Image (tube, rainbow, N blue to C red; front, side):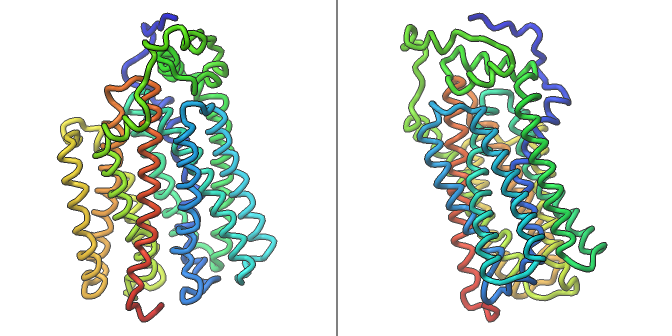
Length: 414
């Protein structure tokens, strides 16, 4: 099979970047809607009994992590098209179910409603593992700009929901009206992502080129997407005949060759999720902004996280050194004493500044690691490494969420 790259432009078009951005937005918009509307859940479910921001996040992460472990183990045999479409469809159905639950219960609290929300959140976690791992693995053997755009879309989901929450809090007297608007918008975006991934993304010229190239290198995960784009390939039929030529590194080999990158992502999200969102909702005290304070902090984090994900597009300031990435990642743990003393002695201005730097470093380092790590490998190996990177990211999220509970030790509000 020959690959004609004469018509492929080295720089992706605006349409291709926008499609990746929307797919990233749809990968987290449902979950970010729940995080951003956290003040509403604190009204329904009192903090001393339920701790909604911490509990819901803790429910979400084990399901995401466990599902991701299974998917990583079977990565080379999984149909990427079915995987991603399953994830987006599950996001769509779960978000719609949350909307129906809120309407059916008229926004009531209580243990039964709380358990129902937790069940839907668990479904969000499963969907996240399907989509985020599948998309990052898929984009890892394409151009780095696609990964950056997808990651920017992930952050944009937080920024969008934060902006909407500030507007709805000012416009609606009842927080439940704002929640319904959030869930309706999220449901729409999930449906849009199903359509984009099923009918638009596989037919983009540059996507067809990279998937054909990956198939030529022995990838079996792209066959269904190539078929959807109208491309017939003999690569999968030739794998046995050219087994030595198409040999790839095992997941274990990829793990040990990239252990520093994997550790970077794990530590980045351990630190971030040990502070965001639980600490910001429950441990920052009362200030002049009143009930707006936590919402402003969440919005500031999301906005700077989004901005930071575009900074690596400037090659001169993109961090590519493996040692540099590790040093920068470890230095972020200085945030722990900074947040502790600022919450105890500082005013809201210092806290807002700290949160903005937390968001900046999180977004910047995430893009640097995920765009640099896959370079130099064949398509099937890049797909596998992308999945391993997301697995470590989710492991970091889960560990950070668990460690976040340590902040409530000695907290009088507990």
